[in-house]
Structures are given as C-alpha cells and as structure tokens.
Length: 449
Image (cartoon, rainbow, N blue to C red; front, side, top):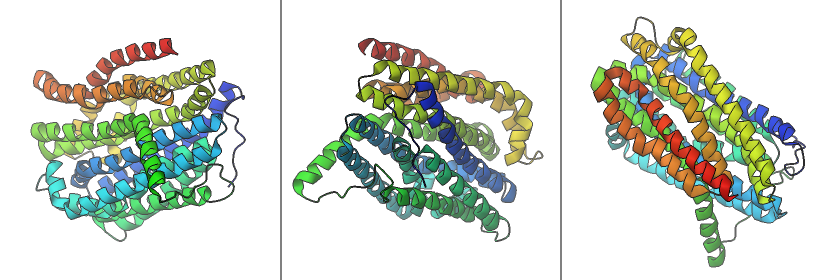
C-alpha cells in the first residue's frame, strides 16, 4: 500500500496524464467487468426474464452511485484546490464531510427503499411477470446502497491523494470477489436474483473497506479529520457540503441520466415489444454504463490535474490536460462504434441465448444504439472540465439537457416517427443535439479564463 510519486503542479502534463490514466481506466474497466459478469451470470444462470428484472431495478442502484459521484467529484475538486494552495487541513476536512454526509443520505434512502419496496417496483414499471425476480434482486442489494455510493466517492479521494494504483487494486479485488460469489450463489447454490445482488454487495463492501483502511493510515495525505459537533462546526459543514454538491451536481445528474435512459427505454420497449423488448434493451443498458464509466475514467484521470492547476492559476496546463482527455475519449468511442457491427452477435450472446426472441431484437438494434457513444464522450469530458474549473452552472445545463429534457423528448418522438429503430436511436439523437450546446458553453468558459 504505497503512495505514487505524483506532482500535479510541476510534472509534464503528458507524463502526469499517463500516470493517472492507466490505473484509473484499468480500475474502471474492472468495474465494468463487475457489471458485465453480473449480467452474464444472471442471463445464463437464471434467464432473460431475470436480466429484464435486474434492468428494471437498476435505476435505484444508479441513484446511489450518482450521490457517490456527486460528493466524490465535488469534494475532490475543492480538496484539489486547497492542496494547490497548501491548505492540507482544509482538504482533509472537506473529504471527511463529503464521505460522511453522502453515507448518511444514501443510508436513509436505503431504508425508504426497503420499507416501500413494492411501490418502488411498480413506479419503475415492473410487470407482474418480473415482479418476484425484481423483488429478490432489490431486496438483496438495497441494504448495501451505501457501499455502492462510497466505492464511487473513495476512488476520487485516492486519486487526488496520489494513489491511483491503489484505487485500481481496490476495484480489481472487488471485481474478482464479485465474480466468485456470482458463480457460487447463482449456479451451485441456486439463490437466483437475490444471490446475484448479494454477490455484488459483498464485492463492493470489500472494495470500500480496503479504501477506508488506506484513508485511516498515516500513509494517506487526505486521511480523515474528526468533525466537531458544535453549532458553528455543523454550520460550516452544511456550507461546505452545499458547495461540494453544487460543483458535483452534474456528476449526480449524469448518473441519474443513465437511470432515466433505462427508465424511459424500459417503458418504451415494454410498450412496443413486451418483456422480450425489455430484455433486449437490458443488453444495451449493460453496455451504456460501461461506455459511461470508461469516459468517466478518462475524465477522472484529468480532473485532479485540471483542478490543481486551475487552483494554482496555471490555466494552460489545465487546458492541456483537458485536450489530452478529450482526444482519448473520442478515440475510444470511435473504436467501439467501428467494431460493434463485427462483434454484435458475440456480445449479445454473452447475455441472451440465441434461441431467445430477445436475441434478434438486441442484435438488430444495438448498432444504432452505440452511435450515441461519440457525442456522449465529448459531452461527458466537457462537463468534467467545466466542473473542474468551477463552472458548475454550465455543466448542470448540459447534463439536464442530455439526461432529462432532450432525452425524454427523443424517447417520446423518435419511436412515434421511426418505430423500433427510432427507439434505439433516441439516445444518439439526444447526445448529438446536446453536443451543440456543450461546445457553445465550453467556448464561453474558455474565453472567460
């Protein structure tokens, strides 16, 4: 458990970016593998109905991770700027407040979900056929929503503390444990969707414990700081948390946007094609978070460099880091779109048997769906850059457009105009129109700097 030798203020930007990028992307790829393996085990071990049931309840999981991303991004931006100013104590206080308050909020939400589990399932559009499977899965992971939130937050902290490789190790260990538990609970023990949820929870908890152990050791520069319980201290905590939430709100909205995509898509595909349509769309919903996570990994690699150098008034260095991250994200997205037509049958086959009606629906639709990845990668990188330089209002505008306003309109209009193909293209149309606004707001921000 060693800190990496990283100097955000003076090291060459290219070298810094590579130091952050490789372990961060590796960490996110293992997190993506975490999701994919879970989907494969559920699809192969329980069936396509179980896959659809998991997709129905996934927005609740994403809501918890969205809170983790919001506090992780907001707290890390503030802490990075404090570190650039030489104020380590303030950075530690901000990180402690961020992790503590997010845990309390998600813990309260977890209790509400458990108490009102059936109303939540009906709200998410769960059919009677999928109700038992969805209930078991939600019951399995709802008590551990805090861990899902924390695993997102602590990754930010470890990276700005100069330990991206240890963040990667936490992710790898969590993924390997999840894979092992998934196999044991789904196949030999036949625990169904409840077992799949429990496997995910156990893997996530192990990753969180590893990260927290690091943050309580003297090795961590950003270790926890005890928060006083006086009225003045609590007022300062609320003020700091509000400021962090304002900066990180776009990250929360971005994760919620994935939930809204799933929710709208589930309703549309259920209406057009029934349970088989939802099962087919669930394959896309396993792929979309992976693309989102890879883009986020690239953004998170650049974020400490951008924030630190912005705080040190070295604006050219912060813009260099953004350009490197943007070029990387676009290249990866173009590669994914290019290889999709040649790998589509194999990818869908990981989740759904070829004899299942959902298989042909997914293979016909996914090539249209992945067209969203290129404009999405640019939008996510611009949002991250705007957050990192404290242009939180502009970042929020872009996120609301791509995750709510334009997305809902696209899912309402595209299937009406173009049928099933229109439904698959809804996300791509949303991201493309959002990109126009993103570029305008980015140019304005750069001009102001």
